[in-house]
Amino acid sequence: IMTDSLSNFAPPVAEWFRSELGEPTPVQDCGWPKLSKGRSALLLAPTGSGKTLAAFLAGLNRLMFDAEASAGVRLLYISPLKALAVDVERNLRLPLAGIRKAATRLGVAFIVPSIALRSGDTPAIERARFRRRPTDILITTPESLYLLLTSDASRHLASVETVIVDEIHSMQSTKRGAHLTLSLERLELLRKGKPLQHIK
Image (cartoon, rainbow, N blue to C red; front, side, top):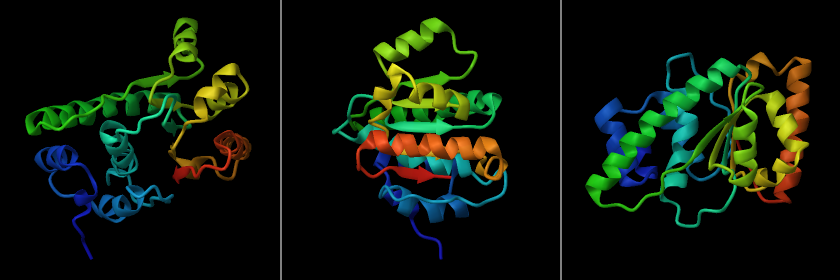
């Protein structure tokens, strides 16, 4: 049964989506009512079905229109492939720009979330900048997440509300997957009992 899943978002988000993409795909339509409430979910759908946007849009809605924004990283995206992480960062810019324009047109106040990419190739100057001023969204790899959690920058991850793990099937039965599981447990400890939304 299809529902009006876009009603879970602020009007600028719904308007941008409908004008640019039309109607939600099944994975989006089924996922958003749960994800917008902060519930964890496993999204199963074929490539090209809008899974990445299904995972991200509830978080973007929260970041842009939540007046109770906190300091530190709020949305953490983990990709097993560095190239995929770069692609997702690029793909985030488009919906953010579109939602910003829709919000301006509708006269709705918004916050533009900041984004950082952290991988083995991240220059030292950018790493230092992140330690001084963390971004709202952090895109990283399992290995870089481990290094972050074992550095003084880990304090910026205590504010994470949502963690998205992409391509989980490629890691789940490997040592890399076991290592990532431990890192996610460490992230839970940083949260000190506060619920963490997992999207896989």
